[in-house]
Amino acid sequence: MPRISVTKLAPALGAEVSGIDLHLPIDEETLSALKDAWASHLVLRFRGQALTDPQLLAFSRLLGPLDPPGPNPYGKPFLEDFPEINVISNVKVGGAPIGNLGDGEAVWHCDMTYVEAPPRAALLHALEIPSSGGDTFWSNMYTAFETLPDAMKKRIAGLRAIHDATYNSAGVMRKGMSEVTDPRKAPGAQHPLVIKHPDTGRAALYLGRRRNSYVLGLELEESEALLDELWAHASRPEFTFRQVWQQHDLILWDNRCTLHRRDAFDPAARRVMHRTQIKGTPVAPAFEAA
Ligand code: SIN
Image (cartoon, rainbow, N blue to C red; front, side):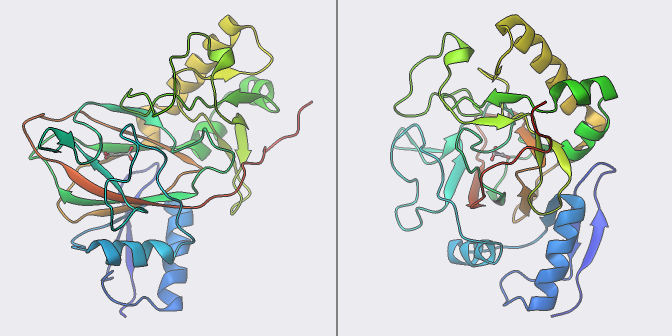
């Protein structure tokens, strides 16, 4: 296989990998170069990769054991033959959605942080895309932490928050959940606000998703104000990379040190993406509680 080349896509994060054909077997040297590029850039884009589902699964498995998708609102996998693949789509067949998240905005989030061991990574493969809209953004949570004022770094070191399991990023309630009226009682894992990345050892801001989040031990009002301040900081445009999709783009991202969101798009257009994710480990704090 020829040597890969890696080109930065935005100052904050994201790089394009070329010189690789993901249909072909990948040798150890190339895989190791890919992993190095991924650790440096957090989000990697591969263009022109018209992969079948088995090929998407085979490439994903090179990065670790797969983590099945979280429960979708409809209670069964979208692809019967490939339950490890999640479908992200607005398309309906016979009135039934073939995938998750519809055509509206998917708000900033990190995947499945409502569980103890959230996925370490995800891969999103564009099969059909609208002519405009539906762009996806990632934000760099190492930079978000590093650029906080020292007083804020000190304040949040040792704090933990609830990561609500009730709603997905499109605001749809997950199966079996009921409405949360008090974020202090939201169901979901509790994680440190600043985590130590298990591979790089770097500190990253770890926010999950804003809705129904609650910082343990604070008055509700104080928690809301702190979270609003952290979220405004974490989503600053200079920390982000914007992906304008082309058909057969494949994007791989690190789910421990990035957030992502997606723009809305024309409901009359078709957008079909297939997605896998890689199993993670329980999240560890960057700093011990004082
Ligand atoms: C997601 O949040 O995984 C979906 C992103 C997208 O639809 O681009």
